View 1 (tube, rainbow, N blue to C red):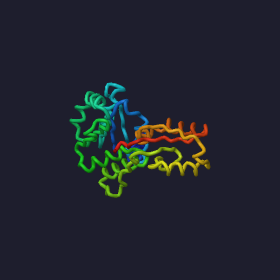
View 2: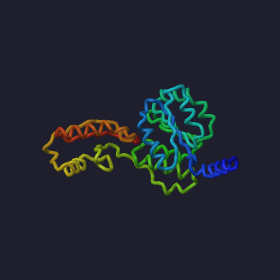
View 3: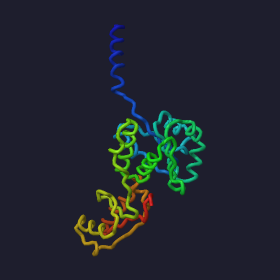
View 4: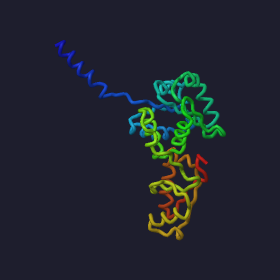
Length: 246
């Protein structure tokens, strides 16, 4: 019986790495100012590329979750838009970040002129990762983790598509495959063809928004607004004036 048990454990031990092979981990540290939906979408994109995304908001606890997220990470993204966010992250895990050896990308989009800063990364790599991250959308999330997967595996980075920038000023509609129109006439023509209605015979209801809603996947409110306006017989015109990269 004892021999049988050792044989069983030996077979399990041989097959265990195949069953639970550990994925390379990427960590994102932020605050509650950045809504968690963004990180949930990133985690799914990472999973599809065979990577693990560990994310934490330092002001949800005493920094313990952030320290666990950073442990063993191959790359760290510090998403700290405002100086307040930067101060909170510095207080919680600043020392740990400085002592670590992993490359770190600091994203400070609301703190010009230094909108990003890269540590232990080549300048071109830091810029490319920043552009994937800040432009957002499903395509850039996919490309971000494809780039990281290729980079960690020592593959050919030129095979990964470049970041896709949102138009600098655009109109959003959830039923449009590319999400955003760069000009008004094209949008109105598409809307008429999509709905079978002449837009000139309908009231046009405009709403200004930030492009960050689209970049970060925070579109539920926008989608419901579009549906409500169309149901009421209007032409929805949800627009932003400038993209994050402008």
